[in-house]
Image (cartoon, rainbow, N blue to C red; front, side, top):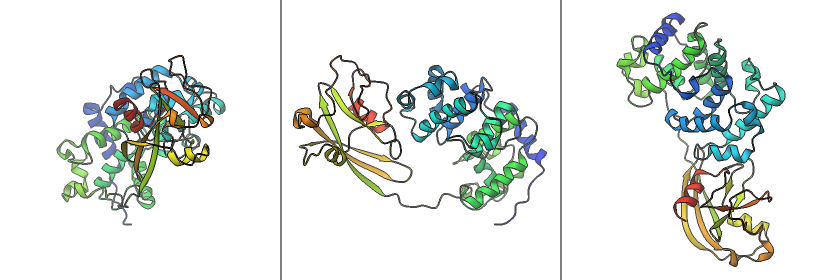
Length: 359
């Protein structure tokens, strides 16, 4: 990979900070305090998710879990319930585990080194840098998607930015341009620059403080950088799900802690349900279909309607509750969900939409 001719640190960082002073975002909910807890929570939520989507989720989380101790002591179902709709649910599971480790191993205080932070679930080098630079105002560079994009354009860096060799080079550039003063402002500034100006499509080059230094702008090649991830056709996964109804309640099954929708409550899968309960056949009627795209595959699921009377009583996991409340019952594996009075449990977005829109 060709070497990069870097500009002086002060030339770039001063230009970015001057732009930030005039145009940067300073009123986001997580900016009202420099708390490491708030920074960490917002950074995890913002991974692969836009600010406008994150704001209401962040506010609900802080209202319910005002401290890392409150989050650590919460039930995972409550955490997943508040996360429902935000996607990438491994983030929520890691969030809960991380809070518990901070409380159990670090006396409720976030560590103050990148190495220690990276040892916590769900925290990578860039997230660790954001936590430290913003909450402690110390030198700790970041390299999120926004920063990768404008650095790749600034120097016409070839290759997909997340490829190991390209990412290594971009880290060196990020380290070079990160100043040792105003570290918190600079971190927020580079995130804002990528999100507001050096956008993925139609970058606002005339508004960019780095326009005089930008190699992509000089060669009219902004849209060629950064290079996209090499395309790989995603496989299609076919599933059959059971919609088992009784008196307005729907039978849900707790999914394994890892894998698709890990730890969430979902409709039972036809084949696994038959296997667990030694059933040869289950009479069903096709109710609807779900098509959902994951990062690495496409899920195409048929939802088959089943009445409780069609299942042998011997194999019923538990009778629906009689009190009319949608509270989680003792059973660890199954739960009767009442749509009119929904329990606060973690549901995959497509399943929540199905239950609340078509029943």
